[in-house]
Length: 119
Image (tube, rainbow, N blue to C red; front, side, top):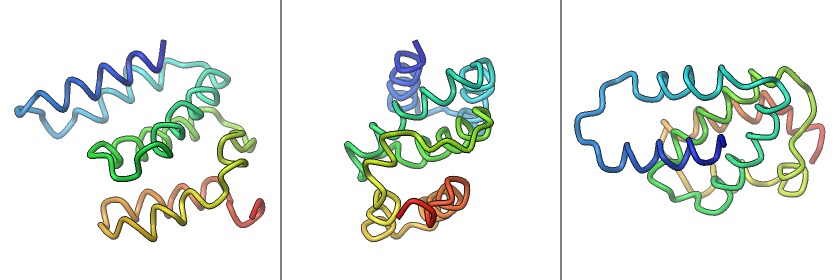
């Protein structure tokens, strides 16, 4: 269900030149905040899969911000299995994407997931 909403969101923003500045916040309010903590934790795997599959995606910023929101909403210290299996994902992004609007949420995710503990 969440994955369908996420895919629909990306279709919408790729075809809409008139997005307002609240488009991402509205998606998070309507689709992340309404999940249970357990659903948010499981949805984070979906988002990480999308990030992992294409770190050059035009939607990487949105995916990173959605992942931050999912992590906070899930209210757990547990690391999603896909990140345990790919502990260098954030380093890989930072080594290949130099835009500050990408690097800032990546740094925040490293802090949130406390990656130094699992490397």
